[in-house]
Length: 258
Image 1 (cartoon, rainbow, N blue to C red):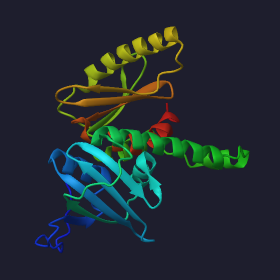
Image 2 (spheres, rainbow, N blue to C red):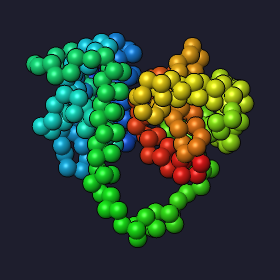
Image 3 (cartoon, rainbow, N blue to C red):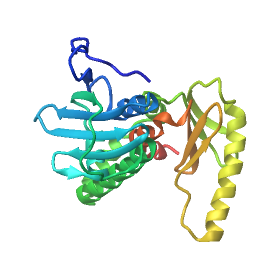
Image 4 (cartoon, rainbow, N blue to C red):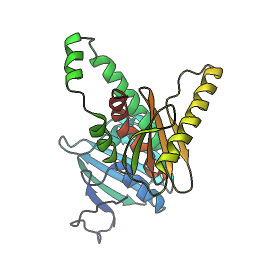
């Protein structure tokens, strides 16, 4: 992970804060970088265009509060995570007047990403008119699985993508990872998912949706795609929140090929 710092930032100013561009450094990476460095303070954000303002306060590994325009708490953090154009300015030592979150940075990011997912589902339901003509247009513009998997590889933190059949054989893969044997992953993943689905059926908790497996050298995130299962391999859990957010629609698109 890299955080781009504006070369023109005045690091000798009294606040000695970091400044940068959201087009080069997303907010999730910035938060995780500052948290891992045990920093405490406030990130002031300004979106472009429009000039909307937001702020995030945190102490060490705990995210205390977030405000985006007039939205506060996790909803405010979720809104800020969607900003991809604008500027940030980290000012160390600034404390929040009120606490509206109070979670670890990683936990807060995950919760905010879940809110973004829900908002995306709600927006999709609103826009879905059920028109046969629109459905035909969508079918005509469907992309192949290889193109979608290459887009998944472009998500920061993703080393490899694998699609596995329920019989355990690898159907398609993209990227590479020295951390995991792809062929062995196929058989193991199919066995694990079949067991999880059987457990879900016995517990009557609906269908399997996601699975995250964290090991010492790698994290595997998998999700059903059509009649198969897709797995993403990433070095660690530091980018898991943003990976989950950015891959959701791509997984749905991939499911159309399997």
